[in-house]
Image (cartoon, rainbow over all chains, first blue to last red; front, side):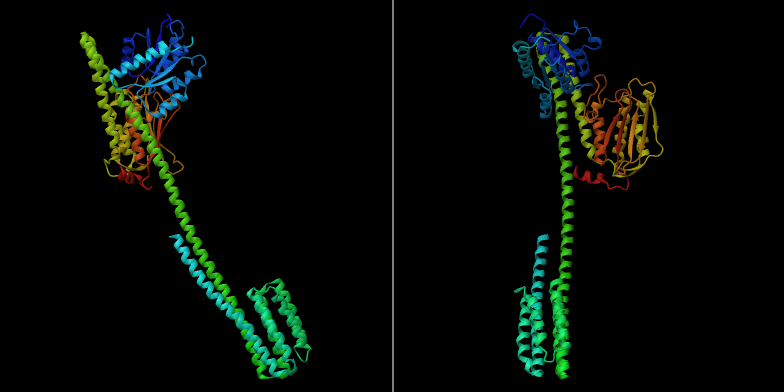
Length: 147
Length: 448
């Protein structure tokens, strides 16, 4: 890991789940900062630096995006599609983190070039372990491009 | 069953064919031989020196003819008239007019054989024999035997030809009739089978669609039901830690989150139960003026309508529909409720309920239109999913539209949404069975 601040972008409409993820990730101290967006449109606006996110200094690129699938306004799969179609943004690893185990969703996510697909475990301990592994893998072990 | 019928028909045809063959054989053998015997008899008895030649030639003529008729010797039908020709030259002792007739008929036989086929030759040959024998016998002898010969031969010839014709035509007609009947049966069977196949295909497609919907539904529902569970388990984990660490405020928050999650779970289960009850009757299906349904549904939402200051316009000419009145009221109530809920900041909120001209299949298209926040075209399918939440700021659609869709579909109708896009209002269109249409409601209910 380099000395640069590590930013995780969390796109999750369920506020309780967002808190769960934020708190468990924070426990493991793998991320310096977590930015939470409750719908797909806000997340895209941030990444595209539209509206209130126009200033690049205050809208740094995330090191990894944790993306829920069922999102208000713009659906998770549409966010994924938009990211992977953008030359500028497609290098950012996108990890789908959802409750859906449906094969249809998995297939569609990979068809849209998702980097990883994770199903939220129901048990608290499993949830914590997943967040730990996820943090260490994507933010520690994984080498990502400078975007 | 069809093949049994065809087999029995084939057996019947085969029996009839054999009968025909035997009769034809009898006619084709007996007739020329009768002719030969009669010719020989009349000529041999009364024309003296010609007897030998006549007998010698009439026998082979008949044999040639018979062989040709039986299909053993094709040239027989040409050799027989040729022999006739020879008979004409030598068979009559006095020659003259008789020979001219014989010559004429022999040529006619040849030509008819070449041009028209064998059946006519029978007739011509018979006539030629009659003329030959008759003219010769009568002119030479003026005897009653000659007259008898003429009569018997003419009669025999005509009866023979008539019999052959009769057998072949009646047999042909019967065979044709049977073939037509078989073809009609086959056609009916094929049509029946095609209809059955089409029905099967339709049912398979319907089942596949239902199955796909079910898979989608269970996936959505399990996803949604799992979500509060994750919250509860997660916050239980936090609760333990926070309690051990003595963080009083956090403990309270953890418990509050868990309460919220259990409330949500409770709400979802209740909503799903509502959805599962759609298949059950509240009222027996009957004819109901749609206006009556609309008025009752609007009445049930009147509180919300008044609170938001929505103007509701109901068309005057609404059709009579057929269905479960209670469920249809529930459907319209949900649509109106949904319209009020998604009015946004519209200063003059308005809902319009009416009917469009009939679609291709004759069903009138009913609609509930509002001038609220509208719906993005990309959400047109998702909007009918249970618990679909299209806007992070709204309360979410819950089960309402899924319920409406299910009620309409249980009635054999269809529902779809039209919107010019976000902030341009929404129109829900749906069809319901007309009172005189077949009523799928009852049938479907039985299976559920």
